[in-house]
Length: 114
Image (cartoon, rainbow, N blue to C red; front, side, top):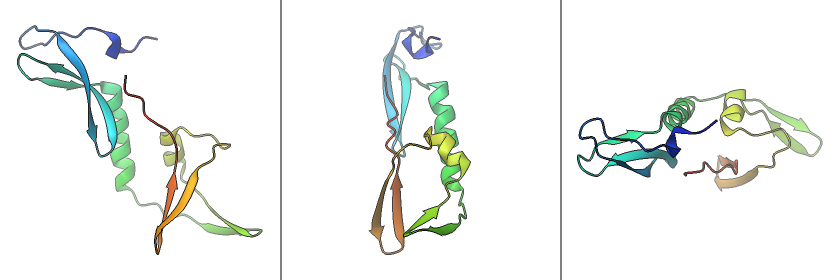
């Protein structure tokens, strides 16, 4: 199925051709169309849906269990986060200690901007 971002979009205000671009909000890239004549801007609907889902997940605070398995510990990751990151159970993630009491878990999934 083709993506609407591949189409030529005309401005609904002045009828001019729009230019493809992107904006970054909270480290999240969103594809846009920008009218050079009247400076109007439109966001890609799928990118906005993903951005809104990201912002809703970011507002949530999850309480998860820490369990011991052998010489390591396991922390369960909520399904909402795993689905949003589109990761599989075989995916390797990076874990680092940023500050005392703060652990960073990094999923290496890059959102492509076309």
